[in-house]
Image (cartoon, one colour):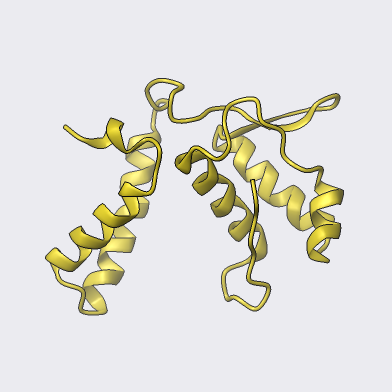
Length: 133
C-alpha cells in the first residue's frame, strides 16, 4: 500500500493518513491482516511527528479499520469481505454524508453531477458490488 500525503493541505495530516488507509482497503489494495508501517517508520518516511501517525492509527483503531498489537504492530482489521458493518456505522456514516451533500448543494453542484461523481468514485472500489441493490 502506497500512501500519498499533501503536507501543504488544509486537511490535517492525521486525517489524510486515515483517509488514505480507508481508501486503500476500499480499493482492495490493503486486506485483512496486512501490516501497516510502524508509527515511527511512517513518520520518518514523511518527515512528520510520530504522534501524528499515532493519532491516525488510533482513529483507525477506534473506527474498527485496524487492530494494534504489541507484537505484530498495526494491521488491517477488516476489509470489504468481512461481512456487514458494525452496529451504528450506517447512522454515523449518514451524518457525515449529509454534511458532504450539503456542501455540494451550497457550492452549486446539482443532483445529477453529485450522482455522477459518486458513481465514478464507487466504481474504483473493490467493494462496489456490495453497494448495488
